[in-house]
Image 1 (cartoon, rainbow, N blue to C red):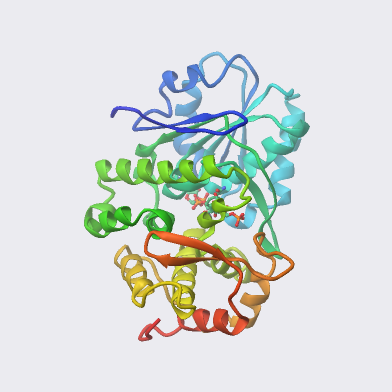
Image 2: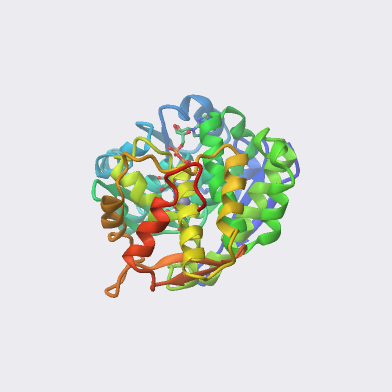
Length: 367
Ligand SMILES: NC(=O)c1ccc[n+]([C@@H]2O[C@H](COP(=O)([O-])OP(=O)(O)OC[C@H]3O[C@@H](n4cnc5c(N)ncnc54)[C@H](O)[C@@H]3O)[C@@H](O)[C@H]2O)c1
Ligand SMILES: O=C(O)C(=O)C[C@@H](O)[C@H](O)[C@H](O)COP(=O)(O)O
Ligand SMILES: [Zn+2]
């Protein structure tokens, strides 16, 4: 086991800790201060449970622990899977003092968090993220929810976890495509708030793609610190938190129009970030070359930043209209003023947005 790092998430209504280490998922020390003698429902999916659920449960000792396994995949991040968790909580006669444990990627974490937010108007839950994306982003900050066919995460609630336990050794079994998708959210922190982090990632591409354990620890810890800083400043996205949505208005629309089955969340966000950076340049908000730098980095990490021609621009823009940041006056987009600085902006015309989308179609293009 490597030394355990702890990042606090400080909030007005109760802070919590994010523990980061290797082999800490089944270390009883991870759980002693997190759980009492309440009933526990361990929720995972049919891919992750066979890998890690027994190990985790072995650390919970004699507690009253039940399991619920959900089907794997973003298309299952829906009302039916949420309702299955609620049914299971009722079946085990869980009371208000019960705790849910979400063991898996962001899909398990988001649905489980929403079940915890809604069952009996709110019970505790603990995040045990097992994908890079969930470790650097989804497990921290309390956004929970499910998709609707009309739009991504359209149903949900803010509900903070009681604790987050990040065992970076679980990334050893993560498929490469999933790992690379997680890197998109890591790059996001560099783009919106931490230019030095972006330089650092650029300086160690090979170690990053090779999942060097020390580098993983650095990527996860720095990402979590960045996220915790923003969430502590604005827990419920009244303002600054929206910067964490950089690339997401475009990315979520790409996921939605393709039925949540063609692109992974991080892959769609990677394309969306290049579109948002390109729009920032077109609007004169940041210097020429900002989008190209971002695109070069994402490509070096193995992420695609090109939008295929069969995804038309008009339906994308229509779907973007259901983005949760939109207000009566129109879309609100996160744009860059430089690498490492973001603003929330409402002044882009539909023509400018369409041009930024179309700029990402041709791989030989100048974005
Ligand atoms: N709440 C938030 O703040 C927030 C932030 C970012 C993303 N999200 C959401 O998170 C979701 C994406 O999360 P994700 O990228 O983790 O996808 P995911 O949850 O679908 O997991 C990716 C795949 O990896 C598998 N997997 C997970 N851990 C594994 C492991 N250790 N070894 C082998 N396989 C493993 C999963 O079963 C799945 O097939 C999206 O729904 C997105 O909207 C939420
Ligand atoms: O934590 C946040 O705030 C984020 O926006 C993080 C995003 O990476 C994440 O994908 C989030 O779920 C998107 O939120 P939404 O409000 O646009 O659904
Ligand atoms: Zn995201």
